[in-house]
Image 1 (tube, one colour):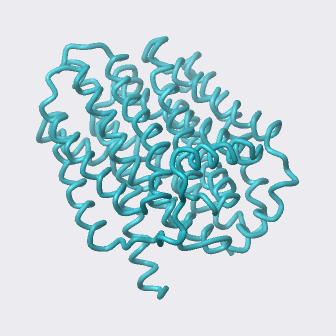
Image 2 (spheres, rainbow, N blue to C red; image 1 turned 180 degrees about the vertical axis):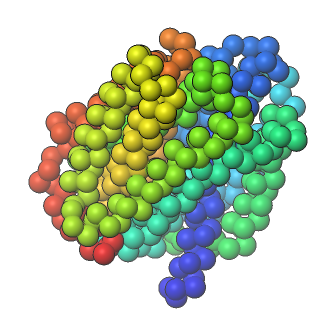
Length: 406
């Protein structure tokens, strides 16, 4: 593969991966407006985010194995088509129940993009090359949350919340054209899985029996839970409790995402001296400490908005170091069923995120419940990493990843 072809592939895969964060985050500034417009409760509106995450989780479990059987292109194009249809229908949603159901369908659609993009990287690259490409795609995953609320805030300055979903439909239409024209089939017939449901269950059983893989997947999921607790609660906390308007919220949210993406890229430098496992453990320790500070500042009000945002951004930076390393370590263990492995990884990440998103809302939409869930997610991830993941089994993978990112 030439450098130009590689660059083109990264751009296409990056765009496919970005549609997930954009679908999740772009409507966040509009959550209070949706609450008022559909005459519902804040918790019910937060459940529309949960619906998207549930769709992402379930969709990956189904689409990942399917893509190992029929190839990557068909599930990808079908998923993008479903996303377009769901986004258009969201524009006309008459109540919160319909909107929640359509958000599940949106999640199913972007699940195809997420799991297929990850599997394509594993189809074409292995070892050091896989780690290098995967790390670069994390840059896109960091940029998307920065852009999403800012784009949403910009749209809300001249349209209402329904216009956000119209924009997502247009984005989906652009992506389906790009994928159809620029992304070739990367899984040849000879390498496809056979055996139907029984083979799929056998693949999942093999993954579940790998203790290191399961531990790393749980670590990634719990770190993602902390992130989604912030995503689902920050709009209400910053706009209603601290009085920010939609544009100010977009700036504050984007600043946090800058910390996240900065950490993912600093991870490249750290890997020249330390193993991914060392970085992962250190990041989880730092994230847990920052989460506890967040709980203290939220409960006491010391320092006001400034200390709350500072501790939030520290947690996001720690997540930015944890999230590239845990999935890369997990995915590097299973090349024989990349789609299924990517599906299980994504399903656990977004499944745990789906639980964490409304969890804080059950106890109110203030800063304290959000802070407790964020700190709890980071602490639980640290405990799993220390107690579940066997250190000896990661030695070879560590060396590959470290070499890749020099």
